[in-house]
Image 1 (cartoon, rainbow over the protein chains, first blue to last red):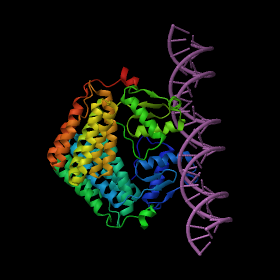
Image 2 (cartoon, rainbow over the protein chains, first blue to last red):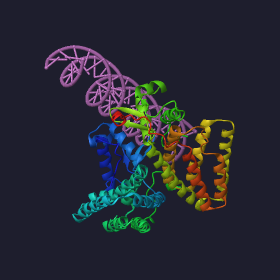
Image 3 (cartoon, rainbow over the protein chains, first blue to last red):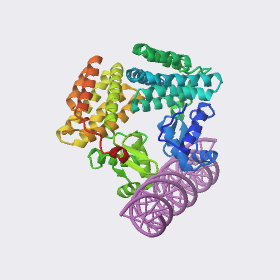
Image 4 (cartoon, each protein chain N blue to C red):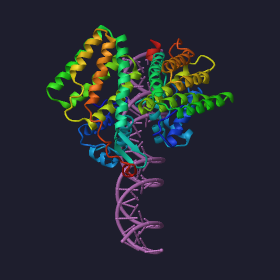
Length: 228
Length: 228
DNA sequence: ATAGACAATATTGTCTACATTTTTGTAGTC
DNA sequence: GACTACAAAAATGTAGACAATATTGTCTAT
């Protein structure tokens, strides 16, 4: 469910995409070192392009860059995870609020069409597409809410949520079930703002509850902090 | 009032700073072209570094980069300006709410100390410092609210607000008067959440009201849109 | 005289080679 | 035997050169 800025385009976006996929599929573990030359060889591109991609991924919170040390897969701690979900609830509540103020009846089918895609991907067992489309639903809400800024914030939040989900999910990824999305659409169509907001908050809480945030922080890079 | 990410450091940050100052002081008008080689010569750095800086400024919404065309000082339209202030009200309301939940009595003096700096800069007529410190006050609130993510959002919002203020302010920049900050601190210290939130909303509304957002959109770069 | 094609110029995009910094390995000395 | 200092290796940071692209100017044919 990686959604890069539309301004990021071409080969750079593809590299971001592939690194993100590796993270989402847990082939790259949090804290893993990302050597530039190694990546350049793997993707058969120049090191300069790898640096660009890493810079983009850093601004999305997916990798951490330490000057003169290199890039690492980000390791969002439990605190950061809770922070992201806390802010997400606040932001998405505002999105729903604003969306219901602005959405026209003619736009409702857009939501239903997206939901259909989610269901199809879910039924044919395409996990990757399911994850992507689940995030896309939330982004579609933000887009229809008509605030470019809220949209940008949510894009960032969803990127980070995805990494957090990949890191902390306890077992089966029942994440972002389409059923809750369907209920949300109904309340939006009925212009039921309090109801829709409550469903959204419950929905996000469910996603958060499926995470194992009681686990100790992942192995940190800072040995000093880890060993003292 | 430019506040770059702490991850942006060294010479790159300095270039961002200088470009931002030129924009804030209206030496660079919205839509102005920023040629890379020209900037490299002016700042006596390599073009690669200029590109880095422009990339950072783009992510802060201060410049627009068009592929194969170059970089331009951003031209936030009236709609975007209203969007930024709308979201800012939402975000800063949440910041105040959360801040009062978390702030300790020992931290109140931090706010007062910052306010003192604002007053000093204001009294000695240091406009540049006044603008910077006004934004810094809002960022300090976000920092003490204890959410890194909210802090990052607000940093971005304030950057854009600054450009918008520079573009649309009607006459005298009575922007972000320290008096309203002082009243806010009092209500925070008294743990008066509704009162503090109301002051914050009024405060932001005052800033917005001083802008001339009735003016037609600034001269656009897109001639087709401008001349048809 | 004007429209279209072509050439020249200017600017951005990309890559490769070099410099700097960090890390790792080794030898020397107390 | 262990600690320090130094040196070699590896990775990142930087800059300059080259290629691709867009724009502007000019010439020719109708």
